[in-house]
Image (cartoon, rainbow over all chains, first blue to last red):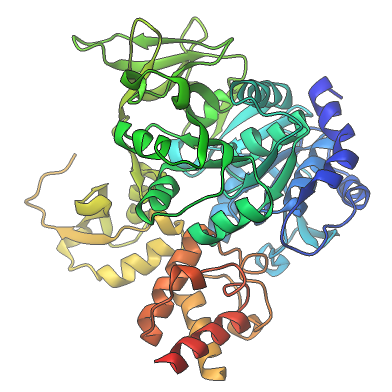
Length: 451
Length: 84
């Protein structure tokens, strides 16, 4: 077992004493460990875990890892059709979750691990190494791709974040963000294992007043939120009890937002961070509470040990951000991965366009054209187009951002048919996650050019 | 309350595309654990409840406790309708 994997597994007993959620007490970790062992998968076999935020999810994730399997967390709302597709594209050997209905997965073996159901495919050769971790890149690279990380690199990244944010065993951290995303899983969950801090896990729905009450009641000192939640807190005039450190994933956080948050008496330390799944995930941090005002429009400077450069900057210094970090993914896997996102000298291609000033501050400019952030959620428009184009009446689809941050998909019909847009919307909704479902479907005539 | 329960089942099946047979959606099932409703799902569920029942659910009522099960959500809807 690798050093990082050993550290995580050895910490379970201690973790059980300093972690809690609002559900019934989770099953004993040892029983989960034995349940995964009984699946008798080969080391390096990938296990898809879809479960809501909670201690139970994290213990399942660790138990799978401890058995030499490769855990892959996924949103609990994921539809069976996507899970089935992921089984193929990512060589998933088993699926585990509380709401898993074995009847929807015919001709496979079933087992029970704690309160969760497990579905095991016919034996397939392992596609990964023991103590690898799969992290889905649903938002940025399409719906059926993932990054292969080593647990070593994720622990390295979580440790750098802890250092940058001064998180120690004296802290108590609150998780309100999804644990199937890298921030909740790596930065907060693994980060808490590494730092030895207490961890309180809450699940949806998010409510600003409840958040404030939790911070107060649980004496939370560390919390991480999204720009959307931060604006909700600001817009609603929510008053929080003092928190030592608040961090925000911030490429869409404005200098005005930073100034507003810093003016709140309950914020002591405010950190704006930038990251992406491929980088493991965090890349840079702006400690806004001690940064010059002129840097409020940035995502700070790269972590210690992380190098950045701008690829082929234009006259304004804008170009793709390249990142060289010890926590970069080993490779990307899945459907339609035609090349790995690395330069010949080992820099990760982020797909995000930035500037970098002489002091090293990184300023976000734009994303690759097929990536949108709608209602605070990142999505890949090409994935949505592909779902629309799988409808038998649709020849071509193009998804873009419309007015008021809405999502609009324009459709071109086969054979000049008049499209039943309600039916197509239902068809798309059955495959997409809710934030990927277009707000508006518009049929285009053949005379409207597309490419 | 059974008509409220039935309407909530409709919402779960038709708007949230919960993958469960209608007769297996029980009032005491957890919306999070048993049906996999996530943060955006709860926002959609709240919006549909407000439309179909003609009520407004305040932020203070948009809590994990009120949105824990069909039964708890039906109780909230009943209270909000009685208050009108």
